[in-house]
Image 1 (cartoon, rainbow over the protein chains, first blue to last red):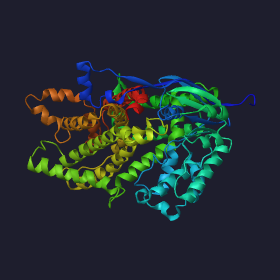
Image 2 (tube, rainbow over the protein chains, first blue to last red; image 1 turned 90 degrees about the vertical axis):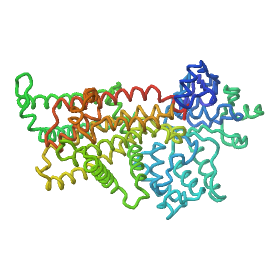
Image 3 (cartoon, one colour; image 1 turned 180 degrees about the horizontal axis):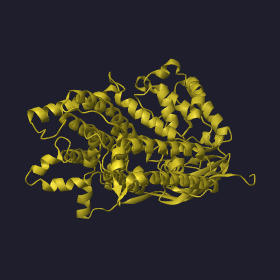
Image 4 (cartoon, rainbow over the protein chains, first blue to last red; image 1 turned 90 degrees about the horizontal axis):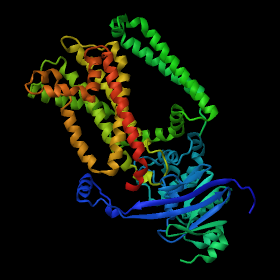
Length: 245
Length: 346
């Protein structure tokens, strides 16, 4: 450990409580009826309980755990999409979440228009996006198709465009839910290389994966979530050697 | 937080203020000239009021500058910073909504002109010729068109913004963006249509006015239209905050609003006029209630400008402003209170 590292992200005692879906009223009528019949009670469960960890500059932090352990929830809380029930998250740098590619796409707009729309949603600056437009187009290999509406694209083309937009930045904190390798074999190779380049380029990365080989290869620290709590955290080898499902 | 160029913003703000004063002074000159406050002719103190407002704006700009340098918090500065930071996104979202609306139609944005016209023709024929309820309203066709344009604008804005949060659920659950942006951009993109429909309104008034007896012509009061538009849009944004946040928790709002807006439309003098109600037995309560109907005030605002060719009474500005600011603030407070829960219900 080098001393005096710059703190990028600090998750402090975060808890997240949900109400169970089945008890939720979907309409005004149901709420009123439930209120009258005294059924307005909720079963609650904690997706996360007292989770704390720090991430320093240049760290590649792996988050592992079973399905439903709270991995996606913690990523959403860190990226600001969800507000935790208790606890807080301190962020020192701009975050680019790569949770689901292309969720801001509009099928009626052309590829070009979607580059700007999606870029704006991801928080890129206008000048930056105009400067990088050619690079995005080249990486996506869409050529002349870029001026066609997105509804005429194949799903592979859409994924390629989405990936190209999402990875054009060099964010200070990058959040990745599973390594994204999309498209045909050729593009998969290219996109994997781009991910590796991003993750090893000095950016701080939070990385969720089920692939232990990838975790061992990429991460220097690992947090193991189990049932909403931190089971173990520390250097990769230490945690991975104890990690059994 | 990003630093913003307050010097440039200040220049724009002062320029905007100057344009507003100019529009208002020219547009409402007759009223300004005639009115008096506490026995003093308004025209004597008007320059003083303008100067005072300008000075206030300047002082506030200076305060924001001081806040930016010292890092202190300040509502105006925070507002500007948010706009600055997300203006590209706002731009993109408004552009998307507007583009998509007419993307696959042949006539495109021309529909914004055509729609109110066609609506007016149908309603004019039905109400004026078939049912004969034009009453004693002069220039009934224009009277009707004013009402339709403003009401449709409001209805469009509120319905669109009502769905803004639920329709963008895919985004809200994946990327962090201040959620205010969704209803606001929906209202802004829908209000482009209101602005566009001003064109057929004024054109029809011009053409109709030439052939009508007595003649109806546009006067310089038209310069006051932007004030009415801004007030209406602010009102719509407030409504959008309300409806969109309710919609997340109760999808019934969508159907309920369809009913409420129809009820509201018929209780607003769009087709009929207030004087027709006054003559009716047992309708006095509706006339009395009309004072509390914001849409009545907005529509009258526009009608006064176009049909009476003069500025609305100064009290009307106050009433419209009170409704706009009131609903905007209430809506904003409510939206702010519940926005963190959206994600759990989407």
